[in-house]
Length: 331
Image (cartoon, one colour):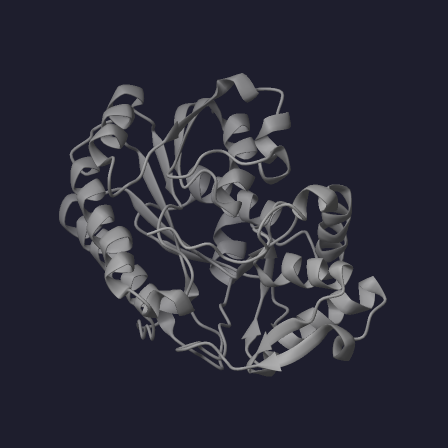
């Protein structure tokens, strides 16, 4: 079944831009909304999609331009809204927590309050984070209690709880999707996988926060897009789904793997730096619910995905050298 319209909030984010080509395969029209302008083609895979003309982009800030966002949603009446918008970054959320709460909680609450009254909305998929659970050394199921430890995680836990309450009270058609760490071609350059590759190519020393002992899983952007498609098509409204590979790596192990593909030693590339404030040691999400009920599986192993990311950076390295490799905060 082809949908009439899908709206993607946070369309310039890594996962958002990665999902837009899938959305173009699923719907007659796709609306992308993001507070920043569209970037270079190498960050936006939908630019080469054969149905690129069916994509409409709106630059708008969920805090400053809420009325304009709601107006365009009311005009296009998308059956599905995918929500990836919000303040990211964990350590930085300590510097001004009110920014994270204003965007990730207050602005989203106002958005949902409008949308719960819209009879055209069939599904609202909110991409959340495993950080709402806090650090766990055992596999985390979807019904695990929330134990957020940073303003970033608190803001996500709060809006997730609010969305769940809206579903129970009003039947708001929400799904919560939580993912392992994104990676792959097209990712922001300050993230650990592209950053490691860039620093190696440039002969720079990579700061390894806390020695890289924290444990994560890494999910390829194409597996993320497939997961979101499956939630939209067959997910049960009101449910939470986890998406994660079964392989868990310490950050040190992940960077060592990247070094091996680049023919460099970890000792040459990385140097230990102080850990980030409030960082949880491990996120180990169970993903059998999504595998059993949605038929999802991760099809890109970490080795292959790293190779693809290296090739992507090799292709565009000259252009990337003109851009900042560090996170640039936008209030």
